[in-house]
Amino acid sequence: QVQVVESGGGLVQPGGSLRLSCAASGRIFSIYAMGWYRQAPGKQRELVAVITSGGSTNYTDSVKGRFTISRDNAKNTVYLQMNSLKPEDTAVYYCNVDGVEAGPHQRKVFWGQGTQVTVSS
Image (cartoon, rainbow, N blue to C red):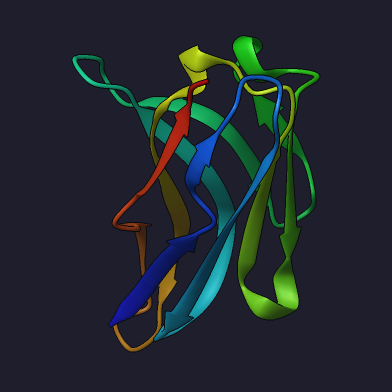
């Protein structure tokens, strides 16, 4: 099995910063891309940022210039540095791993359980 575990969420005041981490472990053979999605109450899950194995990145417009995604390929870990946080960034943030599971050598998308980010004064 492949495990995806997020950490780093919490409560922060508007204008503050948080850093999320996500590690993939277990029977993961290779990873194509890792990303972060978020889901606010009553809304659909949306892509926040994604990074490929080669380092190419993509961000949703609302976080450009404030969030930075990075990756440590050796550790199968992805990070999301979130600065200048706004109340509208409040959501559960989910890590997404697009990779190949060892054994069946089948490409799949794996999800973490999510971590809550709350931006409030």
